[in-house]
Length: 351
Image (cartoon, rainbow, N blue to C red; front, side, top):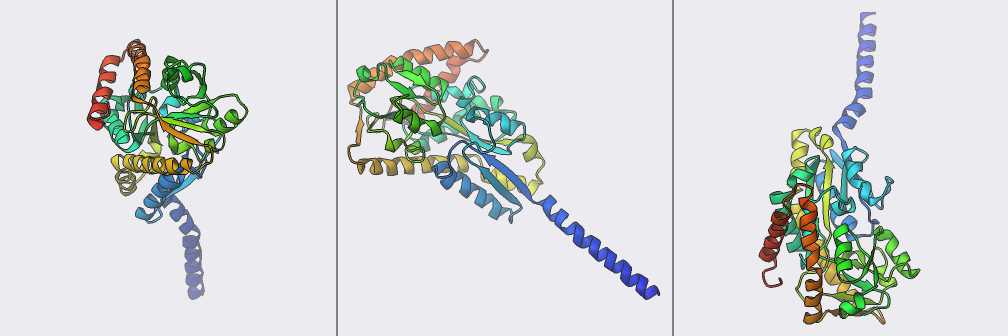
């Protein structure tokens, strides 16, 4: 009888252990909901975010796994991503702080006209600037990366922009508040819309084109509805640029055990910033070659005199911005001067 009771007790304990085992494993496994605004074919998703998730999974022995939600699959608009991650709807987001106008004024200095000439050096510059001038406004987040798209150029359906005269009245999609002000200073008409809507808007004549980085051209099918692609003279800063960031929910990060925090940390910061920059520059080079193969497509650079005229026309944007952020109790002049000094450091021959 005692033997039967002992066997029964052992069986009950074994069943209990088996039942509890999945719960232990589930508790030890961290699923990170990673949301962003571009389709899964975009280089940001396919070449940076996906590989980043694979790397942290491998280094954590699959204790960290990502569930990626591209193209706003968690709902809302790109401007709401910063709130989605802060409120825990997403655990990590990749987004442009400038999509949420007025929320991150200090980082906007890097979106002043003619600031960056490529993505890799521009992203290194952006990370330096963030650490020196803008950390406080991101205090509600665990910041994994702050980088830049390398600069936006004119992509138009029917207008070959050779000077300020061609920009006048041109309706172009602009990504941020400062990009819109820059275009206005050149005589154009800014139109705000998500990247996913731009190609359709061009096809329907709602806009004439966009001020966009090369990286967006193929995933958003801009190449199918535009003929002209006009950049600055080789190596010179672009008229506009967009700061981008990878933000993590602070409470989610704080809840991780120390060894998993270490996995996140060593795959973030400069290493992630440079990963974005390298991919952007590679895609720019690839898309330049690709565009040259499209029948009827014209890829060109502005002549130096026309380029300088645009830079001169855009100078009031910076003066206005300095006053604007000054009204919000920020030292706008110090921020703008800091950004320009870093631009001169990273692009010494191009300013």
